[in-house]
Image 1 (cartoon, rainbow over the protein chains, first blue to last red):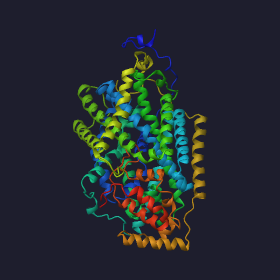
Image 2 (image 1 turned 60 degrees about the horizontal axis):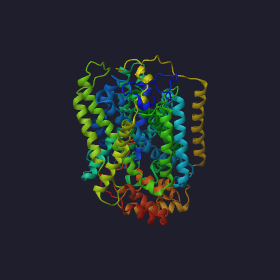
Image 3 (image 1 turned 60 degrees about the vertical axis):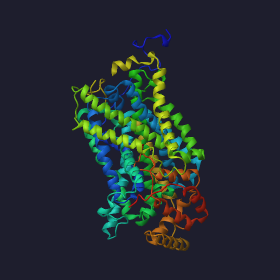
Image 4 (image 1 turned 45 degrees about the vertical axis):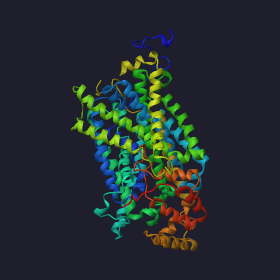
Length: 486
Length: 153
């Protein structure tokens, strides 16, 4: 029987997505907290925010209250009630089609994100070995492809357990230890009797109000906490998800805040804003910082540490959204059987490989085609817009689940859930609106044309593919094995 | 439907030899990179020219109303060639690196451009003017049209 002849309500076994013996693993709540932290925070942003001095505390704390808190509490409740992560929450709360949109948005944005992350890795390595390489396209392309495919290999081979180990190690070696070093040196600087380079009085806590630019700065910082919910897809790997996931989430929130705020403050104590000189990337700022203490021997070590943290974070992003996409593809049959294949570590290898091929092409364009690299920042605006759609759906789903499925036992019940969801939804919507305001990088042209470009790109990348999946899916794509196990 | 224990009984985390070997290889590679980095990373030498250029930069920073660090720190930081700041800042990837720096406070997927303060590149321009003036014009041509605002208090 041809696949197209199968009635929609009669799923059949999918030959290509044949069953494999999976090796599920347990991880501890602390490991999951480290994975979550590794997906969101590193020292990469410290020099960027150090230029704002004490204001960086405001720029992180206010978004934490308005966006991080609702996001974390809501995700904690949802993950303590339903396994599977955002696709499951949205599928249960709204519908499976909305669930597909949510997980696709989470997945698709990473494809365009990896080239900039790995471009950062390449320029950071170059800073140590040969700074001229940082602007060499061939070198950048090779590093991006090499690191990315190594990540794919490790993800496929290690499964959740392996990724958890590597991401946790990356966080420890690449962020926590060097971050603590920066803070200690910053405190030593102050204890030596030096006055802080950035004013640390109450007048400098609130950002200077310059109208739309200040609004863009504050609201865009909501996105600093993007991804806190992503690792909820691994909640099934906890021994007691109901109590352990909320614990992991709250611990990760604290760590993320510390990593974001303290190193940025430490740098601002030592280096004046105008000397941070971001023209050569963030390593230049770390170099200036260590030059003050005559400890430049630490520059290459911190550079390698930043690379480790970035690679560790990348592993979590490779594993999380692809797993969500695999789960909904198998459960609902939204993707062809080829994409439903998982290896013995429950990793969606075919999804990862195809994603890798697409990412490789984009990354090479980024590295080798000048017009692409110069304009690549536009894609980062589009992809963050796409990710915000996930949050809109998550907050709506949480409210609906509380109403429609109140009897599902939740290990953690978020206080004032409806209020949290309204705040989180409005924060996400505000961040989407602000995404249409042209940033510094938009040198000339019409603001309306810019907004149209962002809107079109967001629709093209975020909405069109899931619509195509739904439009062309076949009933035979639904995996009976997934039905049994879900 | 709800999240209790997984439907299949999970087994303890696999710690077979192959995985261990892989983790040791990764750890070893990181260590080797650190060692090579320390050996190849050349901290700037304190030459007479480096001292002179540091003095010039200090004057320029102070004339512009900025705080200048000690000259010794500038020498260690920028040497006599401006270090990475002078490394082709205006070509496409150099430009991409700078544009990527004019961002919000996200480290990973939430990274997004903002309307930055001119001071973020002001210091860089003075460094170029002092250490590699031949790069300055191209840098200005590429970056002077960026839209800035006074967001730093």
